[in-house]
Each structure stands twice: as C-alpha cells, then as structure tokens.
Image (cartoon, rainbow, N blue to C red; front, side, top):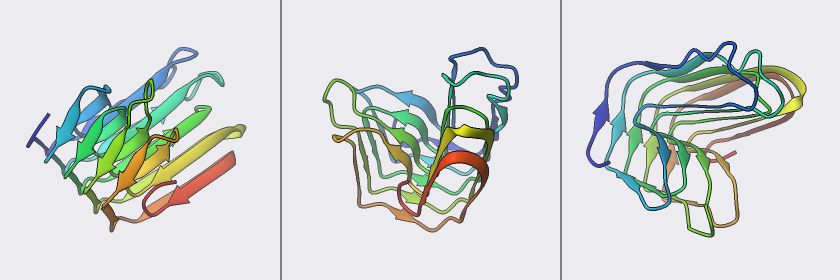
Length: 174
C-alpha cells in the first residue's frame, strides 16, 4: 500500500463480540503481513472502537491506530493527524497514532520508521485487574525483540483513563 490517504471516519462497534476475538481498526490497513509494506500514507480521519470488547473473555484483544492496527512487515514515511479513540475491555488493548502492535512473525523484522503522529489518542479500559493497556504516540506496543521503531516523531496528546492491572503510556512507544 503506497501513497494513500484516508479522510473518512473508521468506526468498529464491537459490543458483544465473541470470546477470543481480536478487534482491529485502522485508518489505512488493519493488518500488514511479514512480506508487505505500507509507505507514504496519511490518515486524517477519526478512527474509533467505541464499544470494543465489552462482553468478551480474557482471551480477547483490541488494537486501534491511525495507519496500521497490527504490523508484521514495514510501515514507513506515514503521517497521522486523525483522532484515535477506543474504550476497551479486552485482556490486551493497544492504541497508537501509527501502529498499535509492532510484532515480528517467524523472526522477520517488523519495522516502523520515519513516521509522524500529530493526532490525539484517547484510550480507556473498563476491564479491571486482568487487563493490560498500551498507548503510544507512534507504536502502542513493540511485541517482540525484533520489532524496530526508529526515526519517528509524535506531537499528539495521549490520554488514558482506565481501571487496569497494567497501564503503559509513551510519547513514542508504550
């Protein structure tokens, strides 16, 4: 995916989603596989999961981002100025301006480089003591040792209100 722009609203209402479900919402691409690349893309639209994972079990995940929800490939030279909003109740919830989860697959290197976030990130959780929430200006979480995040900037505000066991917030990555 190259040189694409999203100006519209992306909203995934996941209330009542089944047990063990992963909910992914992004301004451009929900999932980038290890052989793919997203480059020179822009999101200006709002991305939200207003009722994500509200009735699911501890095996569910919620990922929301301006450009890519889950990256196992390469994301480079992208820009987000859209607002990212989610209210999650999953066991693991991640939100970010560029990539929610940067995760290598089968020892491939997942890369986020030379991207910029200027959009606000508003992320909350109601799960309670079993949940982990990760929120970053560029990357929500770098899931494994081979995930690389470099040459990026964040100018967006990050706010989180939660009732979780673990809360991680970072200007670049949680």
